[in-house]
Image: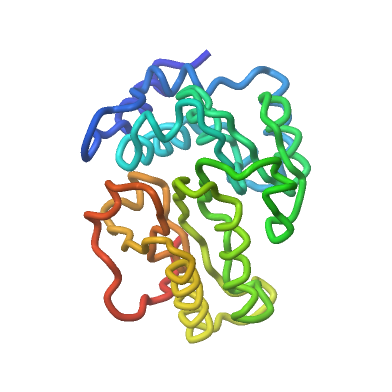
Length: 257
């Protein structure tokens, strides 16, 4: 049961859409993102301190993205792939809008969570994905905070990962990706390397037909995209993103919590 205090917080995080219709209001979000008792127990087993409890803000901020970037036709009757679903906020919202969502997750607790919520969850390395392993080319791809260009061995490996992801898409498919880039925790910070890899990542997306747009600092909280080394949206098939500012110059690899 959601308390009145939590409901008030939820409503404060619900923001008017920037354009077009509101796909989901806070009541629809709350209805779509309901965890049965078994799922709540699984969430509590997560080793990630930010993921071992339910936060309603996750759901409403995912809905802010949907309301600002998407239309109903992006979901109704579509098959969508999500990489790194976490608490499955996006997956539950997309399902409520009429999509079939296939999720890819490696962490065993979150694999179990997705299956408890009724999703098909592929326990497979992102870099090993093919349309055959997914089962079909997909109509949409969502990835939020699940691609760190700094952990790849070479620049070519970063480019190849974007190629693999793009190959999963049907010809008219949409894509929405926000990455997180940071040097591995067991290595000293290396800002020049970080900034180089961010630009390798950007170039790879452009090479494979994605549109690159700047993340407005004012929108980071709106969409919960306050990630390190994350200056860009990578999108395709989403006309509302076209009006956003394009990159100019080289991005800075600033730290974000």
